[in-house]
Amino acid sequence: MLSRLAGNVFHVGSAVERTDVVARLLDVYVARREPGTVEDDRAVAAELRAVVGTAGPANDTDRSATIDALALDRHEPASIAAAVAVARDHARRAREVVSSELWDCLDVTRSRMPRKIAPGRAHEFLGWARERSALAIGVVEGDASRDEVWEFFTLGRSLTRVASTARLLASGLLEPDSVTSWTAALRACGAGEAFLRGRDHHPVPDDAAAFLLLDEHSPRSLRFTVRRAAECLADVAPSCVADEVAAFSAARDRLEAVPADSVLGIVGDAGHRLAAAADRVAAALDERVFAATQPAH
Image (cartoon, rainbow, N blue to C red; front, side):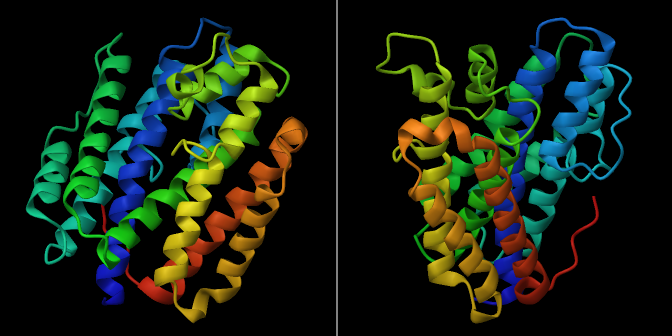
């Protein structure tokens, strides 16, 4: 597969996943968060910007400013609007390998992306963004052959999911001993209902940490997503990124070796380590394999 096409498909997957990630984080930590002081809101906004990897400083004046910046600002690379545009533009560049259904989905999402959200409608918009991301993923999972196109799309998704989940777990948004904090983290990762299924109690920190880091069956857990990314890398990563892939594999091995009963004590360290490893792999692929200019948006 041509490196240009591989890079475009990879970035489609990454941008589609980013849309879901940012929408869930904004919904949990901004749109539906309990009322707090202005200082609390600014502190949350600063942590949230660090988790999603914004380019600019954290100077949001209130929750509306955070929503505008991370959802609607087309010049902020970490925003939903930017991710939607990037997914569509990269899909356009890879039309020969992107299905018509996926292209139509991304094109329609881009055309319907609003520039403003009415007061009180942030939750509704963020739900729409999650649904559009899920639709795009469903098209690929339901129709695509498990070939290199699917693997690069899945690799982009997986590395983005690993990095964002790991940064959240290592951030100040998570208080390791707080039940409320873990409940929010599970919801922000899309794992709230999956965690509660089969349990007769609300999240306790030890169980929630073990689920988000070590669960083998949930696609929202780090163990599951890291394994998926490692499988794709084993199939498609060239030798020029071998060092970064080896470092990622080492981080995976350290995660696999963590006992479930002691996971709460290593959440922050594991998060920092996995986020850095995933970011290094993505950067190495961009610099040495894809070597493509990012599309303007």
